Image (cartoon, rainbow, N blue to C red; front, side, top):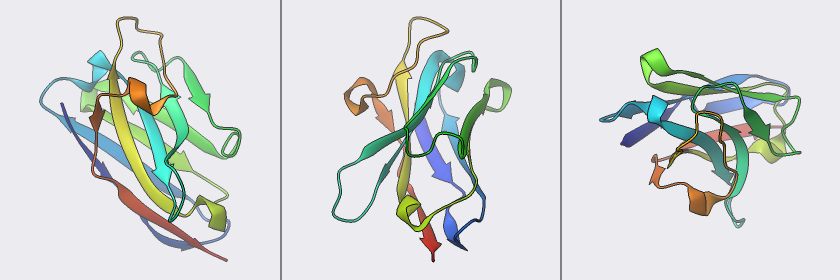
Length: 126
């Protein structure tokens, strides 16, 4: 499966942005999907994950209550709605897909994800 992340941009503190992760090839509904991010000089970190059926989600503490992950399997797309953005959210955001035997499983370790998109830059100015 090939993933394409989009929707990044430059905005001010407190703003909102919605990232999209679209797949080509196999249907994205066969995979659990996660968003990760990597800021300059820092390691890549987990942001949010969603199960195949979209019913189970999981968030890093740093984004809980501000970010929402969702999916539309009919459109082969996963979204990351980001609200109340802060300068510390500045990073390249990546989406990734993991083979998930269960419809309800989700993952937060990067090593569990097999497929990665190319990343989209999000910059939040103060």
